[in-house]
Amino acid sequence: MAAITQLIGSLGFPIACCIYLIYSNNKANEAHKEEIDKLRQTVENNTKVMIKICTKLGVDSDD
Image (cartoon, rainbow, N blue to C red; front, top):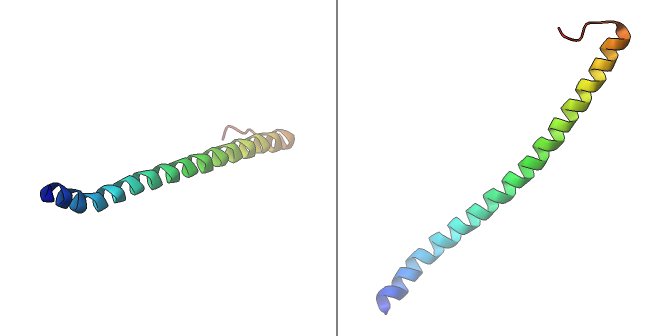
């Protein structure tokens, strides 16, 4: 019984830390995914505006 108690005592903290780090990492990944999606949308909107500007100026936008 003492061996089991010692095993849980010695492994409990590292396991709890690993679980917390996995949870924290997943939350950070979700936040970064949202940021990247917003960034992608902003770049797409900027591209549309640049195409309109080039069209109005008569400049070839393929360059």
